[in-house]
Image 1 (cartoon, rainbow over the protein chains, first blue to last red):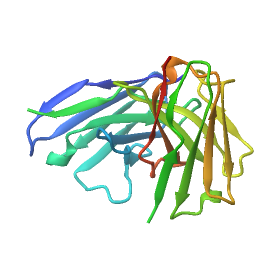
Image 2 (image 1 turned 30 degrees about the vertical axis):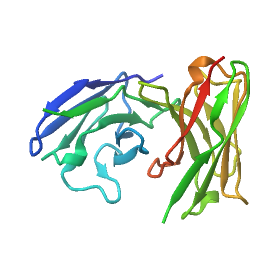
Image 3 (image 1 turned 60 degrees about the vertical axis):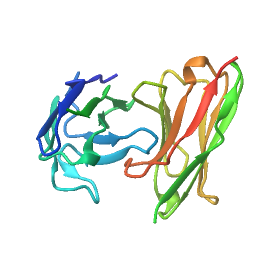
Image 4 (image 1 turned 45 degrees about the vertical axis):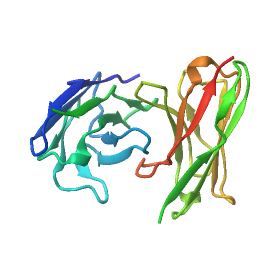
Length: 107
Length: 114
């Protein structure tokens, strides 16, 4: 099973600041890496697929990069609605696996 | 407009069974594989099961293999998750999601407790 590790566990930032989230895989997932935003009581929302492609309707402030085992999600300037938990997920091999999440909280 | 609506959650005793349903509209259900994903209280997301667009291929997380089954009725735009031999650690919100995980439902809560 491919294990995903996310860092940091929590990010305390203010609106307008830049957020940089990391996801590391235990083995190469090529570019089959997705990012999701999840708020309590809501459905998870796909942000980025195949490491760097924004999903439909996702604002340009969200960007993804990386390949192989190291990936980054960057939010260039945090909006109030961006404070949530973010998960990475690999689609390279079965079973599909998610990282433990990074919580972005308001500083 | 895409809609994904799960139902069938509830409270069940350990060892019991439950069947979840997921009704989809707004996209051609029969053309897409589907997933079930769950989130236990205070925990992260965990992939549970997958079924191909035609139902012929299925995959399961090791934690549910042999206890859960997945099926679909393309004539009814409906996905199912049959959960047997339920355990306390199956307690979670269960989501269904399209193949590419671009669309998810709001989830249905399953509580396994005596």
